Amino acid sequence: MQAQQRDAFSGPRAFADIQHLVAFGPRPPGSEALRASRRWMIHQLEEAGCHVERDAFVGSTPVGPINMVNLIAEIPGASPSVIMLAGHYDTKLFKDFRFVGANDGGSSAAFLLEMAKLLGHRRNKYTYWLVFFDGEEAFGQWSSTDSLYGSRHLEQKLSAEGYLSRIQAMILVDMIADKNLNIDRDENSTAWLNNLMFRTADRLGYSRYFLKNQITAIDDDHIPFVQAGVSALDIIDLNYGPDNSYWHSAQDTPAHCSAASMEIVGRVVTAMLQELDRSPHIH
Image 1 (cartoon, rainbow, N blue to C red):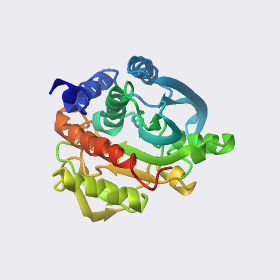
Image 2 (cartoon, rainbow, N blue to C red; image 1 turned 60 degrees about the vertical axis):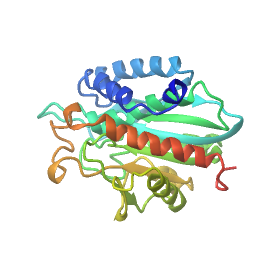
Image 3 (cartoon, helix red, strand yellow; image 1 turned 90 degrees about the vertical axis):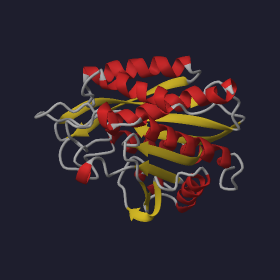
Image 4 (tube, helix red, strand yellow; image 1 turned 180 degrees about the horizontal axis):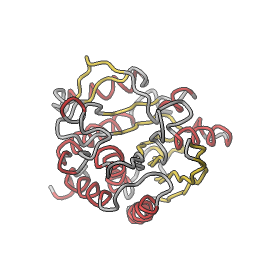
């Protein structure tokens, strides 16, 4: 029983990481709070057995050039083929209120930290990259040039270096700690990964949280990779609070997040990874 618990995704442990991240305060790109949170995350990842690469670059934003850093935590597997688990860790810049991004930025980073604890010390068939994107949020009006700075940069870098073809599947998580969890089907995600997620959620008894008949189209950090031919999935809850009122607001706090929601998504993704070990789509 104890071994099973150590090998299972822990919602309470992930929720504690959300609380730790929120304690750093607002974490927009280039801020001291984001640098401090990054140092803490690197320490956590290295303790979990990951090799961490700092992918530093300069984002050209509407408010000027900003230094940004993606984190890539690698867990080598028997095969060099890569399964990427990803999310963003920055928070959107707001000047008129204090935005700590417990769900939007916090939950994805906490999810990846918990996955590192599960995957870092075990034998894995495939190599895992846990990627923490900087600069997901727009500084002004969301556009193709003002958003997704980290994912656009990393896709271009991997393509130029000839490493992009190693990625067999990408699973992106974003805003997954909402107490009222609802995951729709993103039509911008790769169909076979979408089908695998909903089939897995149904098998685990989570169909009331994974709404396969609710269709939406999400512009998120998976898009640069989808456009480059990588099979990618976005797991996101875009209805946060009454009429989405907690999204990008001062109400995005741990009080409106749930360890149970984190654990549900964690269990589904963990089961998906087991399926990917046997998938004909991975080679």
